[in-house]
Length: 262
Image 1 (tube, one colour):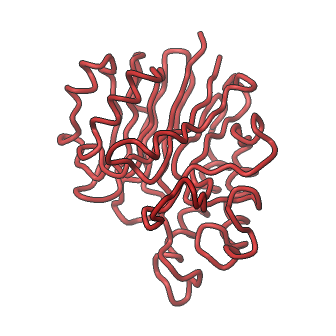
Image 2 (cartoon, rainbow, N blue to C red; image 1 turned 135 degrees about the horizontal axis):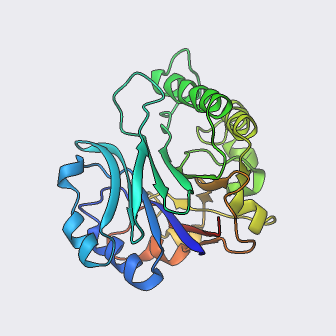
């Protein structure tokens, strides 16, 4: 059975529930992974999603910030949650489908404005989080798994609007890119999106600060779908739904899709 998966930093699941429902109706993914839900689990509008055909949910949340959720129209079981740093932040949850495919949903810390761990605790936290993700990938069985989410790093030169101008900007600095690459290598992950779309500029995030985000097109690919052996990635199935960035009261991120046949 082919499973169509979507990941989306929704930037408040309660505020943007109408566009979540729009996505579910128009795109009908089997599984939708959300980040930055900004809601305790008991405040997520689960009844709305169940009525839309997505009665199964695994989630973790903080009031007003962070938060991750996996919505599914297929039965799933909770496969655990981790903090990766001793913060209490809700930045990871996992679910296992009846096919045996495990989905790990991540919201990696943004890292603040200054790319210096000695003077910016938020950036130090981001690097520690990534180091712990790499350790987790080395030590645990992540076979037949998919890793999705807002990883808050645009690793390639063509994942940003200007490699030269963003080299010292948090999300594209060499130290972050190196840390993300170590997560990928240590866990045996493949970047599914770039396997399907290997060349050219590709973005999933555009700042709210731009008066006309589409015309300026100063984006970054901060959102990712990775997979390990056995996940059954369907070649050519990836896409970024850029149009969703222009929906009413949008997130600053666009949904990212890929399909799997485990």
